[in-house]
Image (cartoon, rainbow, N blue to C red; front, top):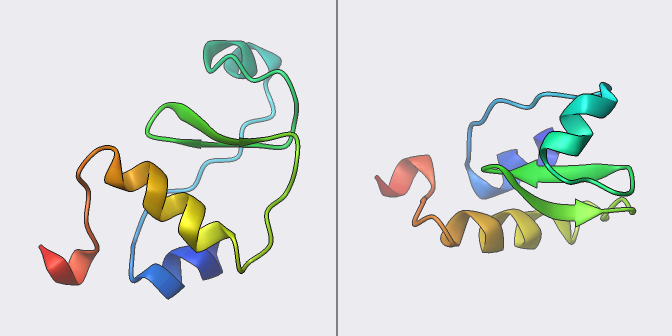
Length: 71
């Protein structure tokens, strides 16, 4: 995850959740899962480092967020 963010020129806080109550909060049915801005981006599989940047970009674009150097 850190490498994917670095490739995109982004800085972000990453939190690992191990509490099943938190899974319920986000409606996660399968782990592992990746939550971006409160929505499930990936669930039940681990994307490769090559796919991860695209997944992050898609989910950030839904919120109009941009890379740090574009602001």
